[in-house]
Image (tube, rainbow, N blue to C red; front, side):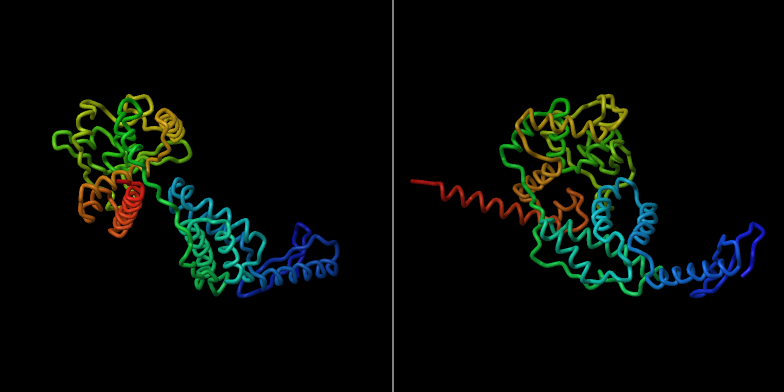
Length: 343
């Protein structure tokens, strides 16, 4: 142990292959030796325990957020990460077992979260523990052997009623043109908000879906990429849409001030959509209108493969699931009609 020019005592030891420096400001070498020995014992105990979950989760979070846009993180990761962080906060990472992970998952099940939401929480947990394994903080990922129950509830996919679809198709002026457009094209909200004059080919009655608008907080961001590669597609401008489609417009089809310069902010969209629903006594979302489009394809007898292309699904199984759901809905309606019928 040596005394530095600034008066501090310093001792260097090698622990687990690393040179570690310990300092003491005690006045005598004997007192400093005692102080540094206490520091070394504390350090060794901490090394033995390893990092806390908080430490590793924060490390992972910082690195992961650098890889994806803020809107993606806020939409798909933030809520799950916050719940996970709160549950495991203060725990030594090495002490967390599959039992504790399963307890966390069961709490989500008890609170009746959907299968998709629970699976997302498990995915975030898995990424954090994989990060810990790769960086040598732990040897085993306790999430690896966790299996979700098969009977978890799925988020209900509500289809718009026939009356709601008729109401949407009855109005197309001002902001009303946006839900009217969504229903007749099957565009996602982000895709519809990204439509510009360069996207539209009225001569051939096609809309080229190549861009979208996403929101970071309230701010709209125009991106020349889509959700998936298969989302890039051409959508048919149906006759009903063609009849009222603006013949001359510049910039964004759906804009803040109707001048095409700026896409709708998140706040403006929410406010106008809420007013629209109140005006016509509707309870629908943009995504439900997309399923309304799928219903139209189903009723028209459009093949599943063609429907997949028109809707921009990356997986044909998703299209089949929607078609199956529509088919079930129709059977239920038929059953009600038959039961209500009287000669």
